[in-house]
Each structure stands twice: as structure tokens, then as C-alpha cells.
Length: 136
Image (cartoon, rainbow, N blue to C red; front, side, top):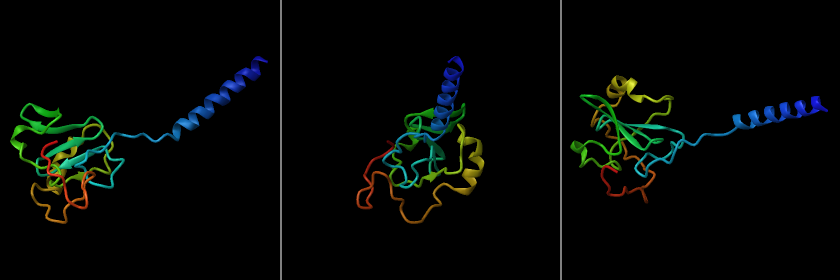
């Protein structure tokens, strides 16, 4: 009797472990100004302001003389920057908590103001036109 209870508990633990492995982790909701088509990305790199956006924490990450800062808004020098119109790089290959560890490469590969392609479609765009919102 005791052995059968232990066996049942072992089977239940095994099954629950297998089921847990099948769970997909949802990082968070991408912002309305985020590029369409990247539901599993945690970070965007914003070349025009040399900053990152963390979807999970809903914080911008940018460099200040004191180091990397996590904040709800971009610094005041970018108060006129339009997140809907600016180019966003979805960091599809990155897994970790410090995307700025690769900042030198991101800065080199995605130069400030160098994107001149077709306007990105955003999560909040309607009919291909972006909403007129700034720094949100």
C-alpha cells in the first residue's frame, strides 16, 4: 500500500514536470509603438536615441555618465522623439538581462539616423499610419 502511494506520487511529479516544460512564457505586452511581428522579443534597440526598451519591465535603458539607467521615460533631451516614427530593432537573438553588454556592436550595426527604408508598421498603427504620440 505504501509503495503504491509512493509510486503514484512519483508518477504525478513526473507528469507535472513534463507539463511544466510545455508552458510558454509570455514576456509582456509589446508597446503600441513597437514593431509588428515580434511577440516573443524582450528588448528593442532604438538606434536614434541609442537606448533599449525592455518589454518585460516596461522601462527604457540608456546610458548616463553614472552608468546604465532603467527609467519609465527617455531622458528629457529626447522629449520630441516620436517612438511611433523612430526605427526599432527587435532583438530576436538575445537572451539575458543586460542587452547593453553588446551596445558597441548595436551602435556600429544600427547607426543613429541611418535607417531610410520603408516605415515600420507598429502594433498601434491604424491603416499603416502611425499615431501621433511622443516618448510614451
